[in-house]
Structure formats: C-alpha cells, structure tokens
Image 1 (cartoon, helix red, strand yellow):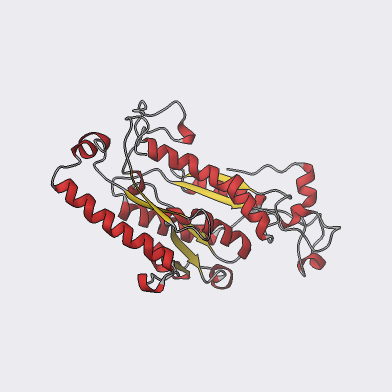
Image 2: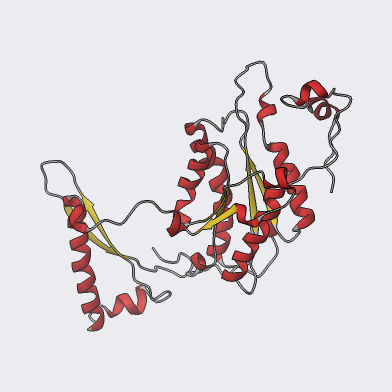
Length: 307
C-alpha cells in the first residue's frame, strides 16, 4: 500500500522544532512510517477477542482523529491535525491485519480537540452514530453489517436478545487531549468498555523494540471509580425507590409462582422470558408528595421486540 501526496501536500511537509534548522524543504523525503504502538496494541486486542469469542468475530477498529487550534494564528490548523496520521495507520492496518475493518472518524477545524464543549458535540454527532450503526447490526442479528450492505443472511426482522454478549468495545488511549479522551469515555460508558492504556510511549524510540509491557489492560470494573453506596447513605427519594422496588419484586415473584399473572408470562414475555421491573418516582411540585409508579417490559410483537 502507498499514500499518494499531491503537490500541495508535499509542499506542506516540513520538519518541526530543532530539525528545521538542519534540513531544507528540498532535503525532506518521507520514506517510511513506523507505528510501534499499533504493533503492540493489535496482538493484545486480538488475544482478548479470542478469549471472549473462540469461534471468531467481526473486528472493527475506529480511528478518531482531530485538529488542535494552533497558538500562532498565522499557522495552518492542518499542521496540528492527526487526519494524515490516521490515513497512514489505515494503510498499515490493511497491510498487516487485512481481516480488521478500519473506520476513520475525523473532527475538522470547527472542533478543537482541546475544547471540552467542542469534543462533546463531535462525539455526539460524529463518533456515536458510527458506533450505533455497528451496534444496531448486532441487535438485529441478521448478519448484515454497515460494510456488508446487501450481503449476509436474510433479515429475520427480530431483535437478538443476546446482542450485549456479542457486542464489545475496547478503548485504547495514551496521552493526548484530556477533553477528547473524557468525552469519548463518557459517551461510550453505557457499553462498559475494556481499556488498553499505554503508560510508556517511547520504548521503540529509545531502545528500538516493541514492548507489550508498556500497555495496561483493564476491565470496565477495574476502571470504574464510582463506588457503590449503602442505601442508608443515599437521599430520601432514592431510598423510597429502592424500597418500592423491593416490594414490587417480592409481589411479582409471589404472583408469578402462583401463576396469577399467567398472561404476562405466557404472552407479553413470550419471546425472551426475561421480565424487567422498573419504578419511576414523579414529583410534580415541592409541596406535593412524590408518586411512585411501577412498570414491566412487554413484547407487543415479534418485530418490535421488548418494550
């Protein structure tokens, strides 16, 4: 694979820092690109996938790139862009791991990687929709993925209730923009991702070797920093919901064992047989007492799945 640069791109290549004094634009040639972190990341990622999916799975790697607004307003914003680096990474991955589907998501000059509000908007409108398209393919369970439209098994028009066991996200990060990293973690937290963190970045630069010990692998539970609380330590409204949920659960199990709600088990939950109980606290005003509502899931029809 090769990356073809037009005349404008070649003119924009320039050495940075102290190297600029030692080289001229005529001397500058791009002969190779090395990706030691990717070379260490991919084998560890594939190893984790084999442990979870011995029979194999669809592997998708999303490369997120962006632009940092330069301090000097006379400098081009593209000089602080990682879009070209992402393009080179894609070429490398296609050559070394052709079975991995590579998707690039780029935030342009309108999204500064160092601005928190910019990153929140970029993640919501750029990254999350891409993740959701692949997630929806797992939910459908029809074998049709975003890169295989028109291929695969015919759609069953049913939701696969076990999709969460087959859809997994791993986040890889090192240093970079804290605002970008935090926005991505917050947006994808619902999927309980695994984390791969490079704590040592320049082993290859100093020692000329790829070291797998430079990377730490953590589960979602290892990285979760919000500790569970005793119910007695929460506020009054949370305690009301918890107590109502306990009563609801006891009554539901008692009625279900006595077959008093056979219609719920036999018809409304006929597909998954997995009841989901919910309690909603509604407060219309500060003076009025809160009202608690109970609810359960139901499967209205096979195409809609569980509601």
